[in-house]
Length: 524
Image (cartoon, rainbow, N blue to C red; front, side, top):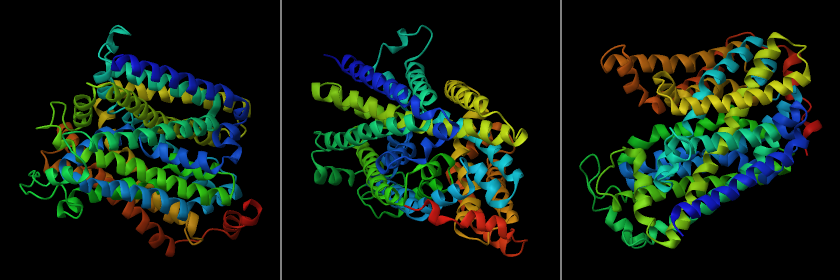
C-alpha cells in the first residue's frame, strides 16, 4: 500500500470524526452563550487541549521548525521551552482565575466586551473589535502555511481531484470545509471536543516524529546526531554552535520570537477565551499542568526535529526555509511501510494543528462582528438573529481565510506577518492591568492600545526608510522584522498603561466593585 492510500484512509476517518463531533455538539450550542462559551462549563482536559492546539498551528512544524532548526540547530528548543513555561504555564497561573471570575462578574463573552465593561468605554470595545476584524482574518489565513507544501509531497495527484486546483489549494479547501462544518454546527463545544481529539493526534505525531528522526541512519542516535551537528558551520561562519544550547547566536536570533510567541498569548483574544469558558477553579489547576505538558511536547518536539535538518539536506531547498521540513521528511520516510504510516500521521498532525487554531480565530472574528460591532450599534439586537448571524459569519471568515491564503493580494500577505504582534501588543497591556490592578484607568487603556499600535507603525516606517523608502518592496522587507516590532509593541503596552493610569482620572467605584467583587459567587 503506497503512502497516498494510507494517508487517504487516515484522512477519511479523521473527517468523519470531525463532522460527527460537530453534529453531536449541536444540542449544546443553541444559545449564544452556549455557542461562544460552551455554557462556561468546559472541563480541565478539553480547556487545556483547546488552549494548546490553538497555540500551535502547522507553521511551527513547517515554517519555524525548519527555519530555526537550520539557523541555530538544537538551540531552537528554547522557543519550545519558553512557549511551555511562559506561554502556557505562566499564562494559566497568572490569568486564568482572575479572567474567569471577572468575565463572570462583568458578564462578558469577548475581549472587546471586557474592555467596554471593565473601563466603561464603548469606544474601546469598537476599536478592539476593529483590530480583531482587520488582523485576525489574515492571521487565520497564515495558519494554512506549510500545509499545502507537505500535502502536495504526499498526495502527488491531488491536483486532479478538483480541476484547476493545485495540491496545496486542495489541502487548504479540506481544512476550510471541515473547520466550517464542525464550528458552525457545534460552536465552542465542538471546537473543544475536536481540539481534544486533534491534540491527541498532535502529541502522538510529535513523539513519533522525534523518535523516527533520531533513529534514522542520517542521525544515528541522539549523541551521534549532536556530534555531527557540531561539525557544521552556522550562518556566521562558526563551527560548534548548532549543537550548543547556550550559543550566543541563540539569544540574538531567537529572543524576539520567544518574546512574541510566549508573552503574546497573554493578549490574544482566541487564547484568553479559553479562560472564560472553563468550569471552575479546580479545573483551572488541572488544565494549567495539562496545557504546559502539551505545549512542551509539541513546541520542543517541533524544534528538536528541525534541529537535525542539516543532516538530511545539503542545502536549503528551492522553496526556502518553509520547504526544509517537507523535503527532509519526504526524503527520509517515503521509502518504507513504517515511514509511509508516519507521513500519513504527520498529515493529520498538520491538519489538526491548523484546524484547531483556525476555528479559534474564526470564532473570535465572528463574535467581533455580531457581539461587538452590531450589538454596540443596536443594543436591542434580537438574540435569535444574532445567533444565526454568528454562525453565518463563522462561515464567512472561514471562506475569507481560504481566499486570502490562496490569493496574491500582497497587502493581505504582508498583514499576516504583523497580525500576532499587533493584536497581542494592542491588547496585552489593557487586558493584563485591567484584570490584575484596580488602578488601571480608561485613559491608561487607550494609551496602551494606541502606544502599541504606533510602535509597530513607527518601527515599520523606519525600517522601510532604511530599505529604500516608502515603497511596497520596502514594506515587504520591513515585514520580515515583524516579530521584533510585535515584541516591542507588547513591552510598550505593558509599560504605558500603568504610567498613564497613575496620572489620569480614576474609574468610578461602581465599575471597580462590579469588576473585582463577587469572586465568591463564581469560585469553585
